[in-house]
Image (cartoon, rainbow, N blue to C red; front, top):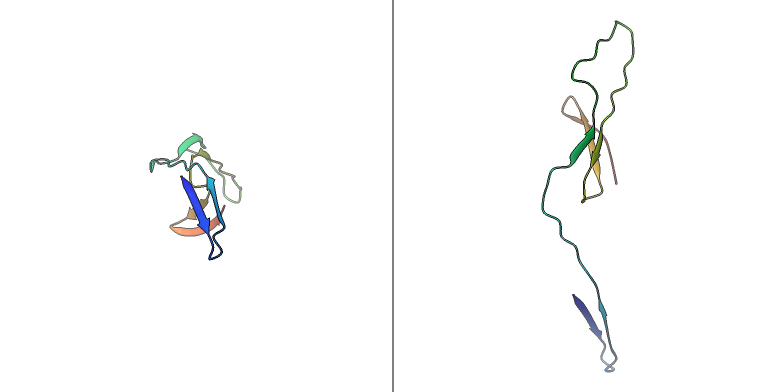
Length: 72
């Protein structure tokens, strides 16, 4: 794409840029915890997922349908 600019004094400039557009695809889950985790009363467990996506570079984490964390 070429972007052109000019002013009332006749000065002109342009720049060529590239734009990549990715199709809307779901992210790929690379790693995830096991489907079943046995936890004793009072014991803590840490569950971890890793996902990869081309775009956008943002994330949202929901716990019980509530947005718990997000970022870019």
